[in-house]
Length: 549
Image 1 (cartoon, one colour):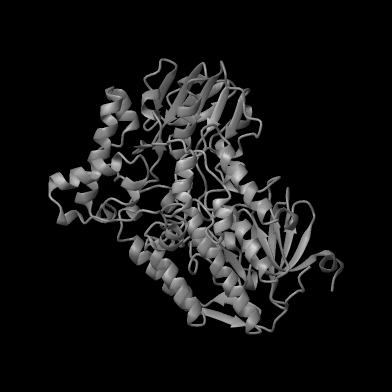
Image 2 (cartoon, one colour):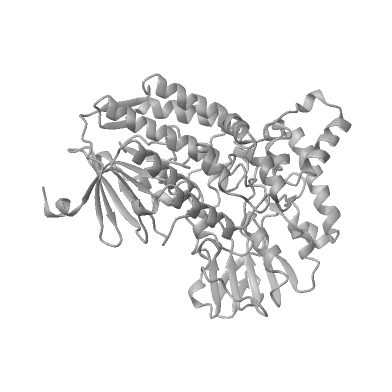
C-alpha cells in the first residue's frame, strides 16, 4: 500500500452533499451499521437551501409535503409559519433535522471533492478533496443536487464590472445592501421572478433583462397558526401513504380527462385550480397538455389571458408573456409569484427585452447590449440558471473503469440506469441525477427519500449476500434509456428548448433530464428490480466492509 493510500480514511460509504438527500442518505447507512461519512463544500448543512439565499427564495412545494416521512415524531416536531416559507425558515428546518438525528458530527464541511477514481483491483473509490483530505471508500454516493452547478461565467467582461456582480446561487450570507442602488437582474425564470418581486420596493432603480417569457401562476401563501399546524400534522399517515405514489410526488394528482369534459367544464376546472394559488394547475389539471398540442394550446391560452389581464401594457405583454405558438404551458419550469407582474408598473422598474437584442458584454459601468445600448448599474444579479442534472457531478473529475471519465461520457450522451447508477462506474450511486424523477416533475423530498432508500437497501443487499461491487450492465442501461426516451419523447417537453432538455448549456447533449413516467410508477419499477435480485446489474466481489467507527 502506498503512503498516499495509507493516509486516506477508509470507509464503507462516502456521501457527497449535506442537503435533503445527503442528510437522509448518511442517516440510513449509519443506522444500518456502515462506516459512512459525508463531505460538503459549504460551511454547514442545507444543500440548495444553504446556497440559494437570494432575496425572495422560498418553497413552491407546500411546506407540509416538503418533508421527511420516515419519522412521525420528527415530522410533528417542526411547525411551519406559512404554506410556502422563505429560505431562512427552510434552512432552520434542515438544522432541526440535522440536530435531531445528530448528523453534523458525521460531516466534514468546507470540503469540496475534486476527483474520484475507481480502483479496479480493489473495487473501491479513491476520493481527493480540495483541502488535501483523501478517502478510500467502497461506495461513493453523489447527493449533489439537480440544480446546484450555477452558470456563473455567462458574459464577456464580467470581471471588469466595477460594481457588485453575483449569481443567485452564490448570494452572500450577509446579503447585499440594495437600498438606493441601480440594480440589474438578468433572467426571468423562477429564481429571477422571486428576486424581482422582492427587491422592487427597495432599490432605487431596477432594470430587468428579459429574454424568454415565462408562464406564471399566482402564489397564495397564507400564514399558519395552531389550527393549520394541527390540520397538516394530523395528515401524516395520509401523506406518507399517498405522496410516494402520485404522478409528481405532490399531494394532488391528475383527476380530469380533457376529452370527457365540455368546454365550459374544462374552463371551470382551470378556474378552480388556478384559484388554488399553487402548482396544481401544472401538476394536477390535465395530463393531456403535456402530450397533445390542442390541449396544450387551450391551457396555455388560459394562463396567458390571466397574465395579459394583469399587465395590460402591450410592450410588457410582448416582453413577459409567451406568444401563442412559442411553447406550451408546463413544458418549462412553472414559477409561482406574488404580484410579480404588477412590479413592472412601478416607475423604478424597467423591463428590457433582450430576445432580439441580446446582452453583448458586461463592461465597467454595467450591461452593454448588442446594439450598443449601455445600462449603468451598481449591482448585477445573475439569475441565469444551472447546468442541470449533470453539472454538479461533471465538475468533479470522476474516473470509472478503464479510465472512463464521467464528464466525457455525459459530454457525448447523457445516460444512466434508473438515474441512480452509470455503466462503467461501479459502486457510484447518484440522487437527483438524469433519467430519474427530479426537480422538473417531482416534489424533491418525495423523490430523494425514495432514491436514497433504494440505494441504502441495495448496499445492504450486497453486504448480506457477501458481494461488494454493483454496476449496471450495458443492456440494463440501454433498456432504461430506451424506456425513459419512449415516454419523454412522446411529450411536448422533449420538443421544447429549456434546461429540462439541457439546451441552456451550449454543446450539452439533448435529452429530457427528468424521468417522465410518474413518481409512483418509477418507485414500483425500482422496487420490482430490487425484489427480483437486481436484473440489469452485475453484482460481484467479496465483502470488503469496514467496521463502523
